[in-house]
Length: 88
Image 1 (cartoon, one colour):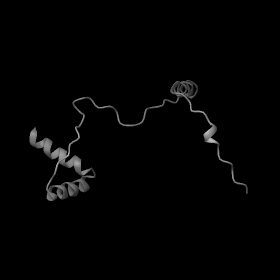
Image 2: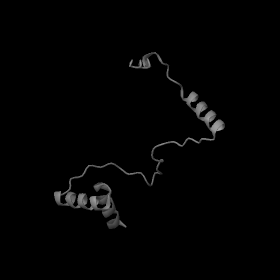
Image 3: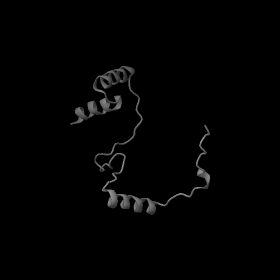
Image 4: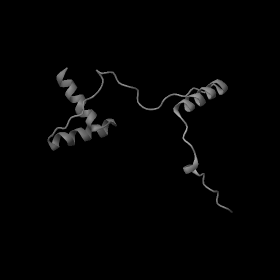
Protein backbone atom coordinates (compact mmCIF):
# COMPACT_ATOMS: atom_id res chain seq x y z
CA UNK A 1 0.00 0.00 0.00
CA UNK A 2 1.38 3.37 -1.00
CA UNK A 3 2.01 5.96 1.64
CA UNK A 4 -0.04 9.12 1.18
CA UNK A 5 1.97 12.15 0.24
CA UNK A 6 2.00 14.84 2.89
CA UNK A 7 0.43 18.18 2.20
CA UNK A 8 3.07 20.72 1.16
CA UNK A 9 2.53 23.14 4.03
CA UNK A 10 5.53 25.22 3.04
CA UNK A 11 3.69 26.21 -0.18
CA UNK A 12 0.34 26.94 1.49
CA UNK A 13 -0.61 30.54 2.21
CA UNK A 14 -1.77 31.70 5.63
CA UNK A 15 -5.34 32.90 5.90
CA UNK A 16 -5.98 36.32 7.33
CA UNK A 17 -7.99 36.97 10.50
CA UNK A 18 -10.72 38.57 8.38
CA UNK A 19 -10.95 35.37 6.29
CA UNK A 20 -11.31 33.33 9.50
CA UNK A 21 -14.16 35.58 10.67
CA UNK A 22 -15.84 35.39 7.26
CA UNK A 23 -15.61 31.58 7.29
CA UNK A 24 -17.04 31.38 10.82
CA UNK A 25 -19.94 33.63 9.81
CA UNK A 26 -20.62 31.57 6.70
CA UNK A 27 -20.67 28.33 8.72
CA UNK A 28 -22.94 29.93 11.31
CA UNK A 29 -25.38 31.17 8.65
CA UNK A 30 -25.41 27.91 6.68
CA UNK A 31 -25.38 25.34 9.46
CA UNK A 32 -26.40 27.27 12.57
CA UNK A 33 -23.18 26.35 14.37
CA UNK A 34 -22.05 29.04 16.80
CA UNK A 35 -18.33 29.15 17.48
CA UNK A 36 -17.41 30.10 21.00
CA UNK A 37 -13.98 31.40 21.81
CA UNK A 38 -11.82 29.07 23.84
CA UNK A 39 -9.75 29.92 26.85
CA UNK A 40 -10.45 31.58 30.12
CA UNK A 41 -12.68 34.63 30.19
CA UNK A 42 -10.96 37.92 30.92
CA UNK A 43 -10.86 38.89 34.59
CA UNK A 44 -11.77 42.30 35.94
CA UNK A 45 -9.11 44.40 37.64
CA UNK A 46 -10.33 43.33 41.10
CA UNK A 47 -10.12 39.63 40.20
CA UNK A 48 -6.63 39.68 38.70
CA UNK A 49 -3.91 38.07 40.76
CA UNK A 50 -0.48 39.56 41.23
CA UNK A 51 2.54 37.35 40.78
CA UNK A 52 4.92 37.29 43.75
CA UNK A 53 7.89 35.29 44.90
CA UNK A 54 7.87 34.25 48.55
CA UNK A 55 9.86 31.86 50.72
CA UNK A 56 7.72 29.56 52.85
CA UNK A 57 8.62 26.98 55.46
CA UNK A 58 8.69 23.42 54.04
CA UNK A 59 5.98 22.37 56.52
CA UNK A 60 3.62 25.00 55.05
CA UNK A 61 4.25 23.71 51.54
CA UNK A 62 3.78 20.08 52.64
CA UNK A 63 0.50 20.97 54.38
CA UNK A 64 -0.76 22.89 51.35
CA UNK A 65 0.13 20.07 48.96
CA UNK A 66 -1.58 17.43 51.11
CA UNK A 67 -4.72 19.62 51.43
CA UNK A 68 -4.64 20.31 47.70
CA UNK A 69 -4.51 16.60 46.93
CA UNK A 70 -7.52 15.97 49.19
CA UNK A 71 -9.53 18.75 47.53
CA UNK A 72 -8.31 18.15 44.00
CA UNK A 73 -6.93 21.67 43.47
CA UNK A 74 -3.49 23.25 43.27
CA UNK A 75 -1.47 23.87 46.41
CA UNK A 76 -1.12 27.57 45.60
CA UNK A 77 -4.91 27.81 45.64
CA UNK A 78 -4.92 26.37 49.17
CA UNK A 79 -2.32 28.89 50.34
CA UNK A 80 -4.23 31.74 48.70
CA UNK A 81 -7.54 30.68 50.30
CA UNK A 82 -5.91 30.39 53.75
CA UNK A 83 -4.43 33.89 53.42
CA UNK A 84 -7.74 35.32 52.21
CA UNK A 85 -9.49 33.87 55.28
CA UNK A 86 -6.97 35.63 57.50
CA UNK A 87 -7.38 39.05 55.91
CA UNK A 88 -11.17 39.05 55.64
